[in-house]
Amino acid sequence: EHKALLEHAAFFGPRYYSSTGPKHHPGGLLHYISTNISDAGGTFDKGELQDYLRTGLLYGYKGRKALFAAPIVTQVLGEFLQDNWIMTGTDETYFGAKVDGVISSAYGGAQIPVFVKREWGAYSTASTQFGGYAFLVDLENVKRRPLRDTKLAPNRQANDEDSVAEEYITETSFEIKREETHSIWRGVTG
Image (tube, rainbow, N blue to C red; front, side):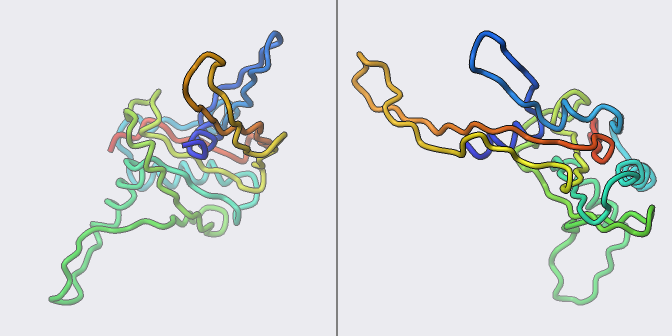
């Protein structure tokens, strides 16, 4: 759970700084990326996918990009391949496609690995919800910057409480450089 929350913060964490207390939040990619945001507005086709990739690949190192996508986005990518399905033998019992990556012919044919973010499937696919999001991330320009790495903090219960409570604490931030090298695709519904 702790690692999942750290990952969630890297993508969607709010940027927050309090001058009166110790609670600060570094902000994730969603709050950092402001220029390369595309709204699918529901369904999308192969041309729209290539337009999105072309925009996201314009800046940065093409060989270190990765697509982190909600299940609905990867489902649509798989549906593109179903049009070309050919049964090669009588013993074939599977239909569909598993998408491990996409290739964009823009800028020399970049090969981009695709990572399905299963937990995003629990959200709505409306344009303001995470269930229809995809992030094209330049991995050269994102780094985790820990202040103190993860540790178990024992004895977190109240003094008058007859129980044992512990929690994991991580003090970290994310360094996101060159905003133009990353992009967001949102609002994919099918």
